[in-house]
Image (cartoon, rainbow, N blue to C red; front, side, top):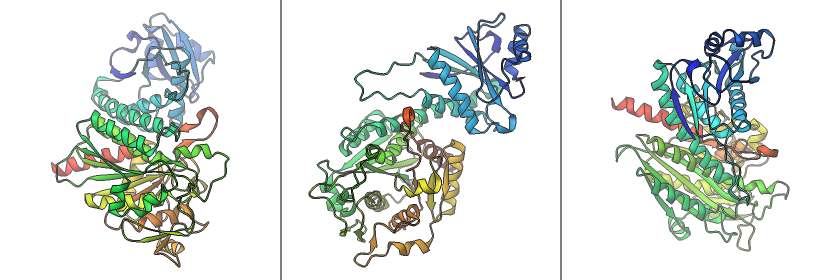
Length: 502
């Protein structure tokens, strides 16, 4: 499926379906006014008859209209001007995508005149249109015997004025890359644990390196990790027949000696809870416990496709948490790569155990920033629900940068406190630190644990347990979040560093 920018008179556009907007109160958009004039008042008559009122995502499909070159016209309600936030814009995109599916369209032209969002930003509007349409048309069929019927659509054109075309073209490039990265992330998240193992993730990283000249890849096996003293990460995989892996993916887009930005993903490819076994209900969803790793993989795809002119390193700590005969037991004490010892009070708090060694490992890169991404705690869902991910950091500037990136990308994060008062909840009588801090403030104490391994650099933690996948019905599956947030954050970093160099 290709996206392209088109110009010209809207009534003259030859397309299977032309999408135009109607504002709340039955107000015709500029493109709709042009069609109304070309059709000698046809749309005005419909409006006057009350066929469409312009409520958000309301639609009316029209067949061939005299004076208009398009075979079909899809009128879409844009809602009130002050209510055109991202949520309503997504509803409009969902309506358009529904028409693509139901009509089996091969191509479509969208002419919303920049009115679908209250933010007058052509780049943002076009990019979101690309990303959200791609997400709506996503289909998973990798593990089905009967493959999904492929949607016929092969071209989506977006009508812009001549002055907005350059900005729109830039949005297409970035939006397509981010959409592709989200699809990579969703595919990995949706695969079952018997396919998407730590070894499989390593193979996907190697394929990425083969695809892009800017990407190199290194895989550390268990022997290499043991030599480095990664006793915490290795402890999680002790009960599994699947070997653990540390996966390092480097995008070499900047100067050789330039400090990299590092993103670290939790890659627990299946989480039974280990000896602290989870309940059976919904345990199938623990294949999604590697969605932090999937976010890293998807983001590295996106930034390689965009060819960002900075150095970025993606690190994935991959393991499978099983209750085998060699599994780590509650009360066991493990030694981390940093030398700190951890009393494992609950083997189901394993994400922090794989991440802490990865966070120590990345010190060697002398990173400019480090952001870890993990489906770390159920507690973050209790705090924030399923709309935003949790953001915890002691770096005010990094917090602002990530929050702003999430707002712009419509992949939002909300800050939770990371205060010293919570650290004492991790005290242990038998080791330097316990891996859980009790029932209160679970998302915060988990981040407090990680913070003890990140003192050498600027660091932030994103807890995506509430946003990484949907649990309900036909919508069940990986979401691809937070590829948009991370991609926007790195786009911003690239823009800032290019400005500094000028």
